[in-house]
Amino acid sequence: MSSPSQRQSAVSAALLTSAIETFVRGVAFTRSFTHPYLAKREGPLWVMRDGPRRRGAYRVEEWVGHGVSPTEIDHLARANTRGRYCICALLDLDADDAPMRAEFKALNYRLNNTEPLMVHNLKQIPRFDEPAAIERVTTQEMADRLTKAARKRQILPKHMVDDAPLRQYAALIDNELVGWVRSITTKTAAGASTWCADMYVKPEFRRRGIARSLMVRMLADDRAHGAEQAVLLASHTGAKLYPVVGYAQIGTLYIYTPARK
Image (cartoon, rainbow, N blue to C red):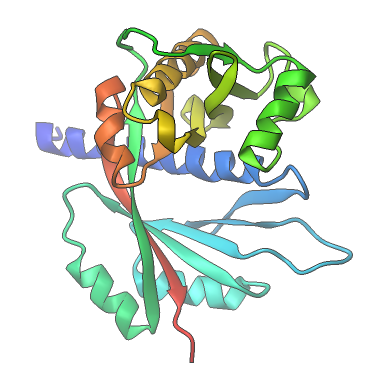
């Protein structure tokens, strides 16, 4: 019979595995607006990369691993990449990262960034006063306004129906678009999960609770549409906001690129 600590460890590992799959499928979805960007298994790793192209350069590949040594990730990535790539290594929340950092450095990789990986179980979603009107984007007029404000397309016409895999939300004050966020539904081995992407509030409107209100509306809809958990990668500043609405950090993503020779 397994001990309580062993059972807890197994639950934590399963949660991280599911969150990683949500991450790769969600990122691949958002990057497929202009050309298919695929997420697939490559041995013990996930790889995100462009689908076959007839013209144009391939975008940077992302090799994602958890519980795999830097040496093995490096070997698999170098042996199977089509060109430029980076490595996304996931580490458990309380794990010592010094050995991993040292091994990647010895392999001639440079650490670009670290990002907290966070999960919301959607069981309890808090309520707050809303400093802005929060709307789901369901019209082409609003989608066009959002594209102009964000300076890139955030939603396609096919995503404006109720059961679309992408739901886009906008915050408005006096009809001015001041913030936005989107949720992507993914199907993982553990069930339905959502990926939160592109949270943004205009600088002059920050510190008013607008981001918090956007997240609460999005999470409530995630749950209503059958998701069992919501996943995101946070900046270190954002990691201070998300626990307020119920997210908990379960790990850290380390992004490495081969050092230039």
